[in-house]
Image 1 (cartoon, rainbow, N blue to C red):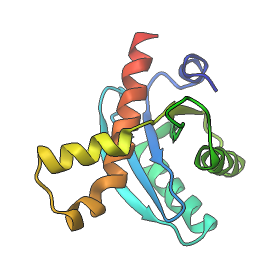
Image 2 (cartoon, rainbow, N blue to C red):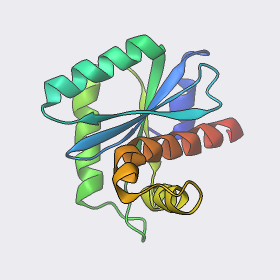
Image 3 (cartoon, helix red, strand yellow):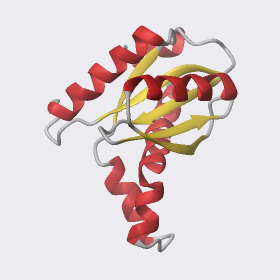
Image 4 (cartoon, helix red, strand yellow):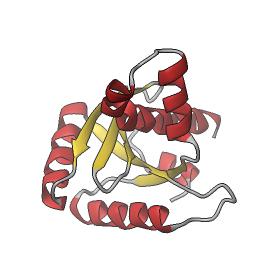
Length: 152
């Protein structure tokens, strides 16, 4: 779904959840209810799809989420590769379990930008970066979508 259509399908008030999809970990970020600021929330260690869904449902209920943004890892030339295909398949599976509007946001270089920030600005060690990178990348992705939604 395009971002404009996604925005039109959202309730006027409610948080958004953002995901940085990975086969082993799912980075999670949540916005405030006014959809101005994205905050890294947690990393879901993926063990089974059903456990993923249970945890996502819990967060959605707790944070009053009304929509989902998935980071779509496009290649540098703009095409979609295998990881983007896996992300789309995951989103479709989640849509079969959770009835919320969702959209994709181009996440090219999001992990690199966040990692660079964590190294240069926060000076986190490699071990500490690994613990926060996926959730921080999810926040970066979600914030990009939130900013774009303010302009449309």
